[in-house]
Length: 422
Image (cartoon, rainbow, N blue to C red; front, side):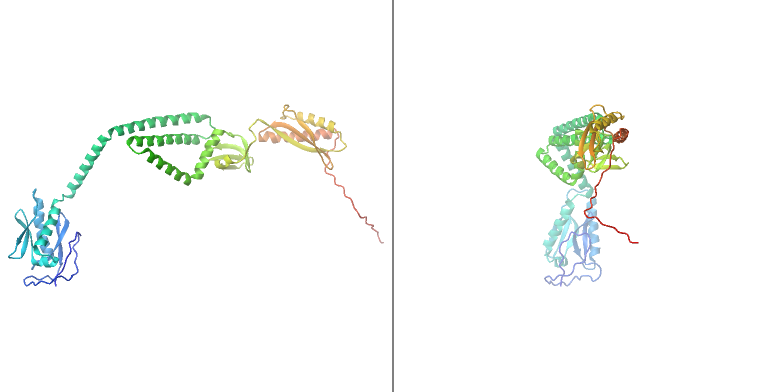
């Protein structure tokens, strides 16, 4: 029974399980029962093929002898390293020779191990050795590849030199334009009523946008397809837009608010249920300080879509007070007294003149509405309203005009008789 070994490229010696092959008589050689059955033949440390034992030599000992011969050949600087096969038909063996030097012998035992005839196995091993000899060492191979890459790069650089120069000019021009626009944006934003960080952010956005456009033009000059670049940029913009929809919406709303200037720093406004003084306008949010001292941050997206009441858009606004007088009072006289009292209050605008109107005939009073114009700021507005109400009350009391409260009449349908018993 002989052993069949298939060719391998693995670097580790391995024992191959026996596979049935054609039995041939062998009276002169026996396979050792100890040690390794097969060993690697190495060229520059790389396994090429495996060999088996021979006579008293184990596979390891035989491989060491052959590897020393191959190493001695590689040390010499020879240009012709072609391994040839010399067959000895009488002895039934073949030798692998290099420049008339025997490297190894192919025996009948080797032919049985690999289930090939001696000549075919010798030719296959010779081809394996020739291919291994033709491969340069690792350092030389890396050097050759590096040199080839450098030569290719040099050739392509020379061919693309006009495009490269054009790209460099576009990059330089883009840098100059972007820096100039950033400076102009910062200068033009000086009158914006926003914090300095927002001004710097706007200038950086302008700077980055110009660089994006310049990069696309530079890549186009270099030879890339404009349509592909714009398509890639469009898909990227859509992806970024979906992922940062709320954040970008707040920033764009902030830019619109800065341009439209619906309100300014220090204005007293009402946004939804919040009322207070605008303390900061950023690109992301607007900050209000309410009249009770709280700070509210409102995202600009909500500010942009909400109804805004700006109480200080003008310097004055109208104030209204309603009160009632007795039905027996002289309405004309009461109106004149009220008018004189209102005009005597500091903070009441003489023009437009106050309006004094009979508003309603209530069940127990004649309701009179007083309209006048006062300072639109919150504190002066409240102070003037308080002084005006006090002045009207005191003037009507001095003229002996009653301001009765609501009177309710109770009518009983059934009279009850109450008797006392002693």
